[in-house]
Image 1 (cartoon, one colour):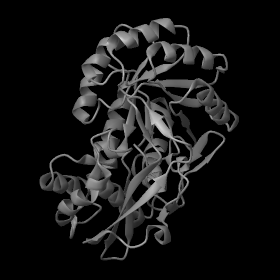
Image 2 (cartoon, one colour):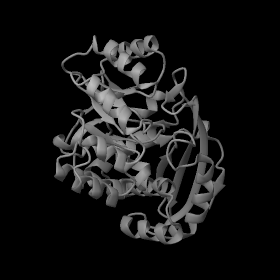
Image 3 (cartoon, helix red, strand yellow):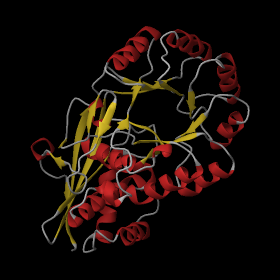
Length: 366
């Protein structure tokens, strides 16, 4: 089996809420998703998706994805997509960095591997360990009344895990959390996500003021060293996200005892091939993981969901149903979310098929 053609599509995903806002004055209403199709000489087709959360969140630029894929195409055309380590090496030789672009190809190769083996991807990643995933829902940054209403709306829909975006003035966020905590329920998991917006002294003030509120603080400061510093001086557990961008950085965080949980965004690490290794290292170290990605539709959700369901229960914090944050669905067969939990398909590969009527013609084809 050899990769015969690569086709690249782009589409806009409109946020289902009013505005997706988080710390640092960043807010978005739509996102540009890139869908990749690899077709083999046997007629099998594999699909990948990468959708950066705007240009100011991670070092991933949606408009740059087609250019990266153009540079990567010669390194994978003619290759066997089932040889995932070789594909990874070939891409690294062709382009330094830009893991988010490589992730689209890697995910499509895993989809092809599953279809060639007539097995779902989660079986190839270790087997079904958690048939039903706990989902978290993001409460975007807004005024307290709106955030309280959104939180209650998700609670009424069956969600028990909430990622509450912070990033007002610290005093305002302290008051916000005190107000929200009136409705806290014993079976809920709260994560206060600062997205790296605070100084160390602000994190300390916030955590000390709210020491009696049960929550995890996610990426409180921008840099790894700042997060490590506050991790050693506060009582709240710390979850790392933006400051971890490679296996080496994850290993450093484990050695330094820098985190109590982590967010694993599949595209950030270059796809499922490398994300699986990071997953296994963290599970072995006793670090629970949120499985997600920056943004995306059904294909992106399927990729991290297959990794999540093949994870030992002690290594699974939660996941998210990214495709349901959008008004448009770009694929059929996406994981099913109901009552705050999500299940994946047992169909071969990722179990999803793009809606080509929505995608239209490819913007690039090799």
